[in-house]
Image (tube, rainbow, N blue to C red; front, top):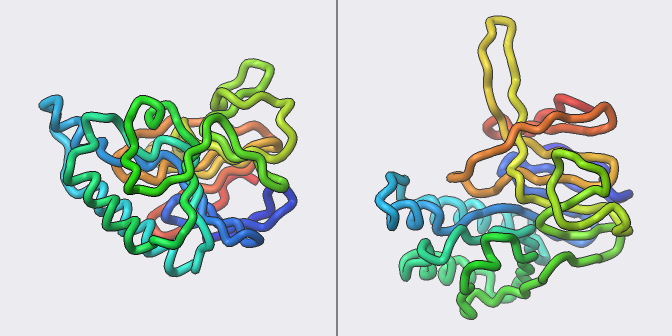
Length: 227
C-alpha cells in the first residue's frame, strides 16, 4: 500500500485495488461486477466459477483489517440481471450479514441501473453523484473538452472527483520488448479513476499526461510509475 494526498486529504492506495480515506475511515472501490461469470455462463460462454465469493471475501477482509466505518462503491457493483442468480444473491447476503451495521453506499453505475438490486443487500443507492467535503463520488467523469477520461460529471463540479467505470491500466515495456498490462490508480489534477475491484474484469489502457500520477498494482504492491 502507499499513502497519497488527494483532494487535500490523505488516502491509502491498496494492492487489493481499493482506496481508503483516512479522515472518514471510508473504503472506496469501483466496478466489482458481481455475477459477471454467471452472466457469461447463462449465455453459453466459458467463465470461471467462484469469482463473486473471491471478491467479497477480499472486500470483507479489507473492511475488517482497516476497521472501516463505511463502504462506498463507485458504480457497477453488479454486472447484469441475468447474472444475479439465487447463488450470487446468497453470497452477497452472507457478506452483508457479516457487516450488518456498516453503511454501504452505491453510486449507481451503468450496469447497476439495468438491474434490480435485492433489498436484502441494504444499499443506500445514489443516482448521479454524491458531494461530501472535498470529494465528489461518481461512476463516470466528463471534462468539457474531449478526453479519454470517463464521462458524466462535468468540470464545473466543485471538489475532487473519485470515479471508476473505465478499469484503467497501463502497458509496461521491458528492455527485451516484453509487455505487461497492469491495473492502475490514475490520479489526475481534478479527478481520480480507480482500477476495477472485480477479479473478472477487463481493462482500458490510459495515456497519462505530464501532470498525472499513476500507481500500478503489481501482485501485493502498489508502485508509482508516473508522478
